[in-house]
Length: 309
Ligand SMILES: CCCCCCC[C@@H](O)CC(=O)SCCNC(=O)CCNC(=O)[C@H](O)C(C)(C)COP(=O)(O)OP(=O)(O)OC[C@H]1O[C@@H](n2cnc3c(N)ncnc32)[C@H](O)[C@@H]1OP(=O)(O)O
Image 1: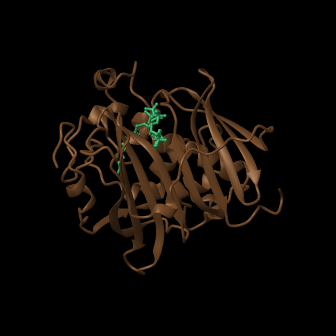
Image 2: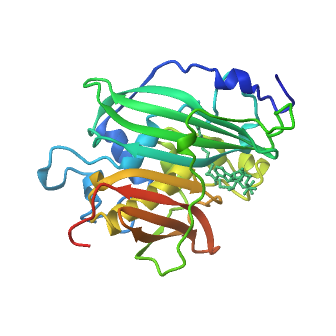
């Protein structure tokens, strides 16, 4: 069932991903941390030096939990998804959502073995949504380290269903994640951070060279006044803020993360992360200060609360 938007749903959902490996060094983890703004407010920040420097002679640098979203990056260097049954205009693809479960702290360098599958495919009429789920194992020990579910939103690519029933496939219906409800109460904590005008250029060094984030001409074709920030970069800023304000700097307290990208961010804008504590769940929302608009919302589940809270 091929169609005008170039989606072949049967081919897509039956696709068996080959196993892939991803290798990272400590340097990659540091470049990522700098790309999501670590130590951007204060180069001597005690909570964040651990991501970029062997603080106090420590042997290892610590790896941010959101770094794991890169393990499973099933895209070409240009940021395009390359799957059978999927033809689309790359300038119209946006990152919609990211869900991460963390099972073990990450080594500061490792070889990762990835097992991926299509977890969902949905025809929304005006858009198509694809979810890719990846389980990542430490190649050496065989331990399962994390699971990522990446949701991509293809503007204008819906309408591939050929019946009155919109096509909607999910191989794990219990994992349906949608936008979270933001409490009306005052946030428990608020953290303000500035992205740099060069933020997307810096973040792209971690592997996503999608021109939507780098090339003003491509950004214009996609309908933006200038290149926009990578969604995963904004998510990295938000989770760093939560680790700082709620986990007292300990990234290993994070158990799972959901982020839904609500609106694009322009590099150079100021991000305000608001956090509400509900038991072991931190509900959060990120707003762009200059436009007073919500750009990301979701939750972070914790293993435990910091004793000093
Ligand atoms: C392996 C994977 C590789 C991934 C590669 C990623 C490469 C990267 O380089 C790309 C990026 O980083 S892009 C930058 C980050 N993302 C963004 O800026 C997107 C921001 N969000 C938006 O613009 C809109 O929410 C928008 C446009 C997303 C949706 O807005 P609307 O069109 O107004 O949608 P709406 O009418 O509200 O809803 C329609 C249906 O879609 C569902 N939905 C909405 N937003 C969603 C989102 N963000 N994620 C998932 N689903 C979403 C709605 O629930 C609705 O479905 P239903 O009708 O069933 O409720």
